[in-house]
Image (cartoon, rainbow, N blue to C red; front, side):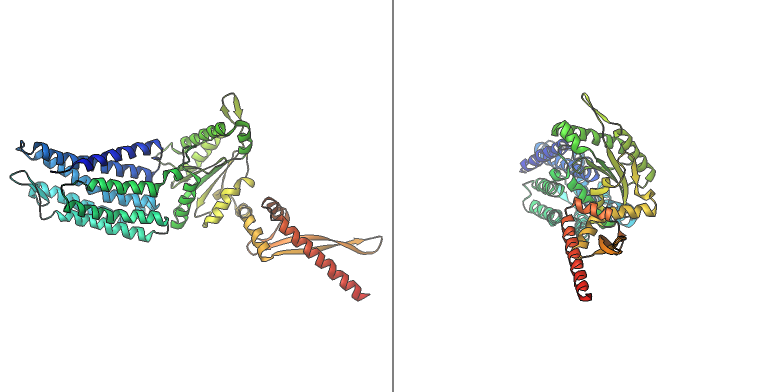
Amino acid sequence: MKILYFDLSAIFIISIMIVVLFLRNIQGNRTNQLLLVLYVNVMITTVFDLWSEAYNIWFLAQETDSTFRYFLYYGYFFNRNLTPLLFQLYLCSVTDTWHILKKHRGMQLLFAVPYTMICLLLFSNMFCHNVFYFDQNLIYTRGPMFYGLHFCAFLYFVMGITFLIIYRKILSADKILTLICFYPWNLIVILIQALIPEYLVEMFLNTISLFLVSNIVQRPEEMINPVIGIRSHIAYTTDMKKALYLRKPVRVLLARIVNYPSLLTILGNDACNDLMKHISKEMKAAFHTTHDSADLYYLENGLFAAVSETEEPDYYRKAAQSFSASIHGGVQMGRLELEMDSCLSVFRCPQDFEEYEKMMSFVNTFSSFLPTNGAVTFLEDENDKKRFHFQLRNEIDKIVSKAIEENRFQMYYQPIYSVSQKRFTSAEALIRLFDETYGFISPELFITAAEKNVTILQIGEFVLDSVCRFVGECCRQSNTSS
C-alpha cells in the first residue's frame, strides 16, 4: 500500500511557493522565470506521480486496459527527467552565463543531448517496452533500459557540478554549496525511494531541496526593493560584478533625480516613495516596448539603473531618450506639479569600465560633473578629451587619497617683488598635484574634491608644515649670508 501523503504535502508546498513568488513580484527576470518554471515542472511531476499511484490503488482490480495508466507514467517520466535540464538552465541564469550559452553551440548540444536520449528511450518504449511495462496482471515492471534514464540524469549531475566548480567565484560560498547539494540530495532521494517504495518521498524531498535553493540562492528580500518594486542596489552590485567578471557586454542607463533631497523634504517619505514608483513605471514602459528588455534597479536616494544585454544600440538609445522625455518637465502628484532635475548617462561594460571600483565610482559621482538638464550623456559618443575629463573626475577621490597616503603633493613658491623696497619681500605658496596617469591636476578640481570628502584637513596640514619648513630654511640661509 503506497503512502500518498508526501505527494499531497509537496503539492501544497509548491502551491504556496508559487503564490508567494507572485506576491513578492520577483518573476520579472530570466532567473526568476526559470525558478517558476522549475516549480511548475515539479508540480506537474508530482501530480502525475500521485495520480498514477492513486489510480493503481483505486482501479487496479476493475481495470482491463492499461492505456490510461501508460499515459500517467509517461507524463511522470517526461516531466521528472526534464527537471535536471531545467535546473542546468537555471544555473546558467543564476551565474549570469546565459550569454555564453547562447554563443556556444557545443554547450547547447551538451545540455540537450541527455534529455534527447531520455525522450528517445521513452518513445521507443511505446513499441518495445524496454524501459517499463505492465504485465498481464497490470503490475508496473521495469525493463532492461530503465537505468538508462538514471544514466542520463547522472550526466546532468556531472555537468552541473563541473559547471559550478568552473564558475564558483561568481556566487557566494553558501549559494554555491546549496546549488551543489541539489545533486547529491536528489541521488539520495532516488535511493530512499528504491529502498522504501511504499513511501512516495521522492517528489516531497525534491520539493524541499528546491525550496532551499529558492530561499538561499534567490533571497528575494535582498534582490527586490520592497517599496519601489524593482531590483535593489544589492542586486545591482551582484549582477554588475558578475558581468565584469565574465566580461559580458551590457549597456547601463543611470538616472539620478538630483533634487531628490528637496523632494523628500517637501513630500515626506511616503509621497516621495510614490513618486519613485511612478518613475520606475516610466522606466519600465520605456524599456519594455520591444522584444528586448532591461533589468531595472533602484539604487536608493533617487538613483535608478537599467541594464540590458541588447545587441541593438539604437533600441537602447531610443529607450533611454524616451525615459528621459517622460520625466523631464515635471510630474503631477495630487495638486502638486513637481519639477525634477535629472542627470542621465549611458555607459557600456566592459568597454567603458573594466574595473568594478571605477564603475561604482562613476555611479556615485556622475551627476556631479554631467549636465542635469534631463539630456542623456552617452559615454561612447564623447571625444577622447571629454572621456579623459570624465575619467579624471570619476577617479579624483581615489587620486587625492593616494596622493595623501604617498605624499605626492608638491609646493611651489611664487616670489613677490616690492618695487619700493627693490627686493623680493614675500612669496605665494602654491600647491600642486602630479599623478602618473593624469599628469598635473588642477587645484580647482582636487581642492573641491578634498573639501567634499574631508581630506582637505590633511592637505591643509601638509601645506602648513611645508610652508613653515620653507620659511625656516630661508631664515637659516639669510643668517648664514649675513
